[in-house]
Image (cartoon, rainbow, N blue to C red):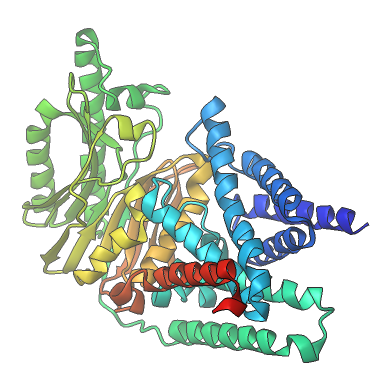
Length: 492
């Protein structure tokens, strides 16, 4: 019967985990991890971890369909690798926690979860995708923890809850036994949630602002797959003229749309990632036209562009070009982090530096899409005292919500407002506390232009100063605990 009960908790936890991979439901993640940990700890080690891996594999395989840029055997292998990574914290918990009393039983698991998420983000191309911290979108006070120690603090709190609750659960919630770890957790969580609530309540509302607009491409100009083929440089000489005419119409669409929004009051106009494609030989003339528009309308143009070098092994330059109201080009930035797979195979990479440029309206920074999946990369903007981050993005329908939510945490971590222009996704803007100022869905009917008043000015955060120190401390703490458990606490 005990084994059946463990399998029931395992199935419940895996089902909830699969749900939160698709939809941010903050309480569900806390329950999912608690159920999974309870199942893991109540079964024999090898059968338990094997069952856990299988349950998480099934949950991932169902939940990530459409969101992972892979198919066939590549999809199976990727999901299997993800499930293996997810099992690691449970395996480390089973290895070390029993040797270290209640301290190990409540702290090994959260340190392990943070360490695995963090090291995966630093040393693989998966970045922070899949972090359980992102599932807490919609809980603003808790989200403010990211301003102090990054998303790793949120991950730690969720896993710490699971470990503490399960430890109390396994002891029948006998208060005289479980009082110390439970009170410790409740105190820390309470202080952090109160701090987050006060941080939001005391956020000033009188900051200078700029009216921003985001544009999007026409939906009926290209046939399905045509923009992808152009980006790959697969254009025959016979097609060059016909596709060039289409791209000219696309260029006109964006430039005239920018004039329209400027005359409606926008001071900053942002185009999504890879929304405007151009052959490299046509780029100089186009940039002159864009500079004239910016100067004529006295507006900042932040253009997500894809420059195509036909005949090149790496034909695609994924760039952000920022032109100021005088018509001067301030930034021409190449994306530093291509999406693994298709984009990585065709894209010329940037230099790994976030550009930050002083303007009369504040210090403006820029990054592109997948760049913002790397917190330490975006932290460069805060370190250079940026007042606004411009972020062109190119999503697809299955990831539009979670990717939008991820970028909220970059605003909180660094205390920088963000304007996010998304192709095939959610365009929006966040203030330095991660509050959504406006949103426009590419897949909604009607005009997909977003106009929003954005506060300009950064707010210094502890995370912008210390970076991933908390995550590294979790790595060090985990290694120390595993070392103690390996030699036996009584031998030290």
